[in-house]
Image (cartoon, rainbow, N blue to C red; front, side, top):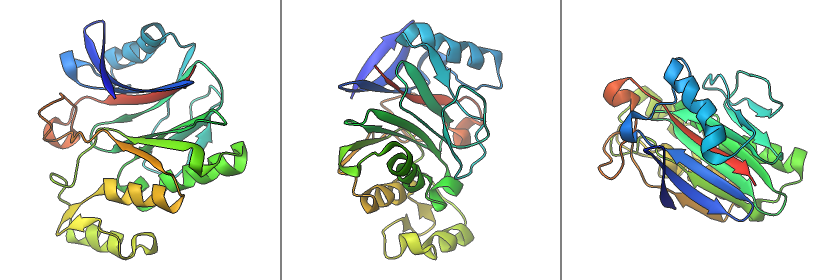
Length: 232
C-alpha cells in the first residue's frame, strides 16, 4: 500500500504483479460522483491518469447482482473481468469497496458492499461467480478492503442489528458492539468462508480518519470515492 499523487490528487495504490488496485481519496476535493459533471470528468480522467483504455462502472442499487463486464451500463453492485487494461470500479462514501484479484487466472472484480450488500453476502457471491465462470481458485485470490465507515462510527438500529444476528451466515460471528455494526468483520467472514488467505485492509474509516481525507455520506452527504482495479 502506498500513496500516489496525480494532477494534485491523492490515491492509494496496492500493486500486484499483473494488476493494480487503486483507491481514491477526497484530497483536493477529488470527487467521483457520477451525477455531477466533475464526477464524470474525473471518471474519464482515469484513462489518462492510469493509462487504461476503458473505465467500467455501475448504476449501484444496493443489491447482490454481479455483472461480467461487457462495456455496457448495468444496475448492479459488482463487476468482474479478465480483460486487460480496463479499470473496473465502484463508488462509495461510507459503504465498503472490496477489490479482488486472482493472481494466477488474472481475473479482477470490484464490489460495492453497503449494509444491504453485506447482509446478502455479495462478496461471497462474487467469489462464487469467479470460481464458477472464470475457474478461479480461492487460494490464488487476494482481497483488499478499502475505506469505509468502521464499527467505531457506524451506529444502526436495533432492528438492523437483530437482522444481521439472525442471518445464518453470521451465526456466532463477532459483527457488532451494541448498535455499532462492523461490515468489515462480516466481509472478512465471507472471505474466510471462501478460504481466501490474502486479505488486506486499508484500515481507513471514512467518518473519523485523520490520516486521509475521505468522503462520508453520514458526515457531509456529498462526494464519492472510486475504488478500481485493472489488469496490466
